[in-house]
Image (tube, rainbow, N blue to C red):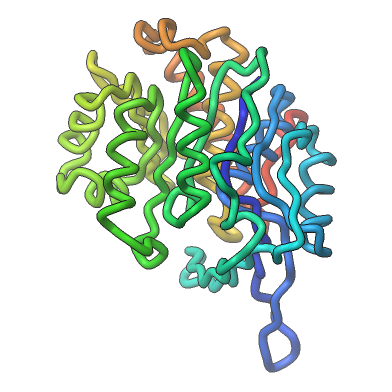
Length: 304
């Protein structure tokens, strides 16, 4: 099983209403999207998050169950659900978060369950690592990972970081433990100060990562290891929007590695270029489907 630990929220997607704009509530959140995508790719996946007992929490739980995600370790409360109002600029998503005192935000380290015996990997990332107290809770999950694979997607959103010093210190600790790190060039620049992707990736490899995954939009993606770089091209599609693209890519990579029996720290240390190419290809292929339709709506296996 792969455990996805992080935020589940409602994306409020813009919709035309005559001469004005309304918003459609759609289940989302970076880590939620990755869990959904893994379930739809026929991967054994569970999610650890905080959900409200309100109508939006019911919508999120229904989405997990419908995509085959094990939600047994969900932490419920009567606090409200986090809302993320989305605006699209040239097809690129911009977000305004409403997150104070929410069910997801107020998770404590003591709320975190023990990892299942059959858990092979833990995936963390998104805005849940930028705010307290839930960031400390998810870091506690990583601390319990033992010898399991840890994948980190920092998904840096500077405007959402309440205390940069605390956040950078947490990122340093998580990067030192992460085996797989997915980042954009903007993430690398913020985390390492390097203006060059290769230099930024080398920095993360030096901290302990075995594979650094770089997403490059229409240009595809690459995987950088201590031995070198493997690249795959993007897929040509008509883009509806980019909501959930990186999250779906993460799921494709994890699903491919899981199918190949490579979700162990030892296997990742010696992973072949062919295996990395297969993982990148599934990630890019799945993400291409997601961007071709509105909102974070990852593909099912039979759509690939």
